[in-house]
Image 1 (cartoon, helix red, strand yellow):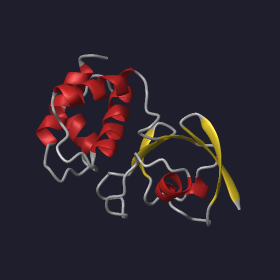
Image 2 (cartoon, helix red, strand yellow):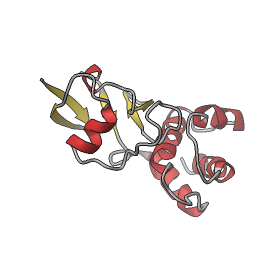
Image 3 (cartoon, rainbow, N blue to C red):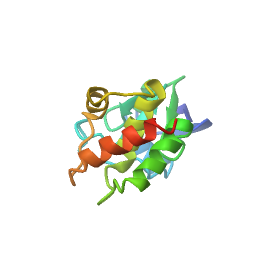
Length: 151
């Protein structure tokens, strides 16, 4: 059965088995490979996308539960907060291996879109579901604070 999804502002018809996680619809059906598979159990945050503006783990979210929702992936994240985050990520040399970065950026941009002046506790809370194998947590926090000054 085909499901219609709105992804990055575009309507897409997807014919996937009921209950197929959004992650696999994005990667396998739509060839949008920016969203990464990390753990498959919503613990690492590599698969984070925005659903109606909220960071959501796509590895456990059934695609067919998203009818009428606005889905945004790393390929489509935009706006002042997202631009500031991308700039701060480069200036602060956040990425090392880079694998978690799409999920990190999605969570950070959602935080700054909602709270343009986050405290350390706000940042820690918003980013707590995103793991970094390279342990660049201090660089990530610094980049978020830097981005907040540019919004």
